[in-house]
Amino acid sequence: MTQVLAISFSLNGKTIAVDVPAHMLLIDLIRDRLGPKGTKRSCDMEVCGACTVLLDGEPISSCTTLAVDVDRREVTTIEGVTPSDGLSPIQEAFVLHGGLQCGFCTPGFIMAVTALLKTTPHPTDAEIRHYLDGNLCRCTGYTKIFEAVKSLAGRQDAA
Amino acid sequence: MLPSPFQFERPSTIADAVRAVGDSSDGMFYAGGTELLLALKMRVIRADRLIDIKGIPGLDCIAVNGMNEIEIGARCTHRKISGDPVIREHVPALASLCAEVANIRVRNVGTIGGNLCFGEPHADPPTMLAALNARLVLEGSRGTREVHADDFIRSEMETVREPDELLRVIVFPQPAGPVAYRRFKHGERPSVNVAMAWSLNADGSTIRSARVRVGALGSRPQPLPVVEVALRNVAVTGARQAIETALPAALDQLEVNADRHGGADYKRHLAGVLLLRNADEAVIAGGSWLK
Image 1: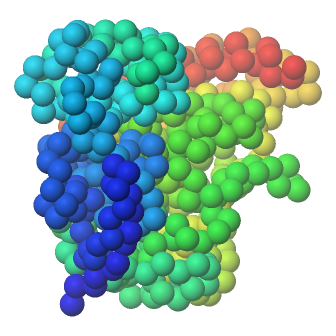
Image 2: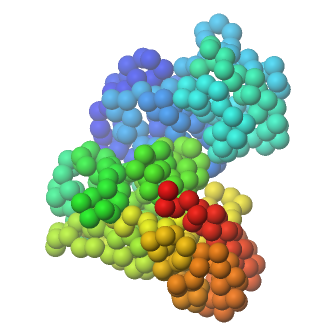
Image 3: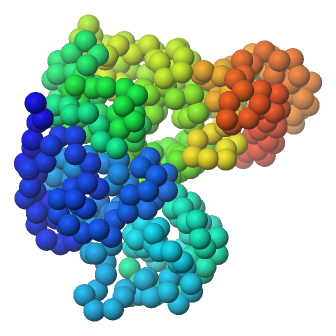
């Protein structure tokens, strides 16, 4: 018999109380049960970063996280960092620098960059490359993404 | 992919966790899940019960104990170890290793204990911990026992840990000389890795003893006894030459699997290259070791 647990957590600042099967994955809870579709499933094995969300501000792979593990914690998805009107400074930088083409990996990158700039507002080139090493893009060749992040270094409003 | 359904329990003590997991191997300890959930999703292993150990206090501590040994709680994440002041001061090579495991998301939740217990041959920490002469402390229904890191991983994905034994803490002596680690990889996991730890004499000029471990080549980390013997009581400045002389015979003794990471001869060659680079780093670090 499937065990169901009651969890309560913050999703993009809104408190969610929901019953979930013990074996449910966070990505399925977010996309299939709660609705927001910005978080992307791709490799399904913690390698590509497309499913990146923030758990208490730190990037994790939602494809390989149990929904029960976010109980009493804060989850932020791409919807949570996107203003209701327009784009965030990080999103704008990606657009300005051509840091996306098909856009599938972009929510994951935006979440990772959000976490990076929160803890390291002035990242060095090496720190940017090291932090984003686990986010894969099959279109841009990374240079444009790197330039977008570089342009944000030190901007007060970025994170 | 979705794992098969399982029961989920959250004990708050080690004793309760050991009781809850049982000894029939249908229950498994669970922490970061970065290895376990992948295997459950791919259905290559099955668990009827997951025993979440994240609510047990004390499993994520890092400290120097009364015997001047370093203790790392098994539930410490790679991220925590990489930034920990004790590790950065006493074993900076281990901090750097943990800062490079997989990717930022895995490092945020993946634990060193989970990494060891999974027994994945292409892993970073087991090679390093064997070179550091670490002991792994296991708590089970029949009491506590210690296993040397060298003896812990039996084969690919297989350790000597019983299903109802919880890895509580990893203990190793404070290094008495430079420690170096290098790997070669072209994916998330190391294709070949080499760890070396030297114990220097009082003035830092001579290697009293060396421990060298090569990982990811075979089913578990392997020592290089020929190199270890060659480095005994050798001047730090003569280390590279001593290794170069011993290297061909030492590499011949390695068990090497050809796999998607490369052919056997190629990976054996890489092990030698990484070892010599470690030696160059250790020689430079050796001079500043006593300061």
